[in-house]
Length: 300
Image 1 (spheres, rainbow, N blue to C red):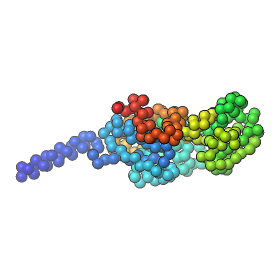
Image 2 (image 1 turned 30 degrees about the vertical axis):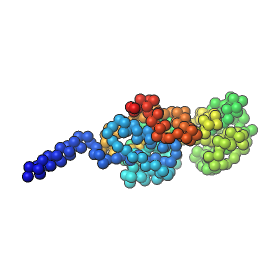
Image 3 (image 1 turned 180 degrees about the vertical axis):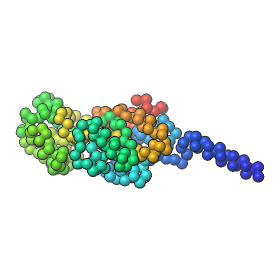
Image 4 (image 1 turned 90 degrees about the vertical axis):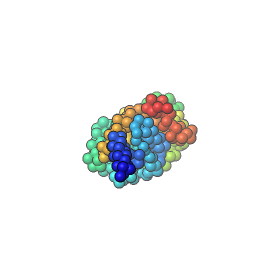
C-alpha cells in the first residue's frame, strides 16, 4: 500500500512538471517545406531557432509540392508550420482572388487577414525578401544602355529580345499583354522557354533580357543585373512563415521565437544563401546554422 501511494505521488509530480513546462517529451512541432533550396534552408533556420530558443522539439517534413499541397497538410494538422509561403501565391491559390493591390503592405494585410479568417492560421512578418518575377540582363548590356529600372528599356526595347516561360506570355492579369499596357512598350522578339533555361540563354546571348526569379542563385552565378520594377507591375511575393493558431495557443512561446527571423534576410542575402546550396553544394542545415550564429540568433 505504501508503494502504491509512493508511485501515485511520482505520477502526480511528473504530470505537474509537464504542465509547468507546457510541452511533453513526446510533443513534436512539424515544419513543412517545398523541395527548393530556399524553402529547405529556411525550414532548417526555423527548426534551429525554435530548438535553440525554447524547449520545443521539431521535425522537418520536406518534399511537399505546390502551395495547395502545403495548405492541405496544414489543414489536416500533418504539419503545424509552413516554413515559407509567398504573399501573391497564397492570395491567388489559397484565397482564390484574381485581382488585388500590388502595394506590398496592402497585399500583406490582405493575405494575413484572409488566411486567418479562412484557415485559422497566422501569417508572420516577412523574412525580409520577396521571391518575385524580375527582369534581368547581362552586366555588359546594363552598362551599355545605363539600365537600372524597367522603364530604362523603353528606348531600346524594339532592338532587344526577351526570354520568358511560356505561361507568362499568356497570363491575363500579370502577363506580357498587361506588361505592355503598364510600361507602354514591347520587345522586338519574345522567346518562350522553360524557366530553368532562361539564365543560360541570357548568359550565352541567345536573348538579351529574361524574366527570372528574384532570389534564384543563377542570378549570382552568371553575374546578371536585376532591373527595378519602378511601376510595381509584378505582384508582391513577400516570404513568411505561417503557423496554425491552435499550435500557437498550445505553445505561446513560438510566436516570439519565430519573430526573431522577421526582416533578417533581404533579397541579396537569400540569393547568396541559395547560391551556397545550389552552386557550392553546401548542406542546407549547415548554411542555416552559419547564418543564425552570425546574427546571434542561436548559441554555439
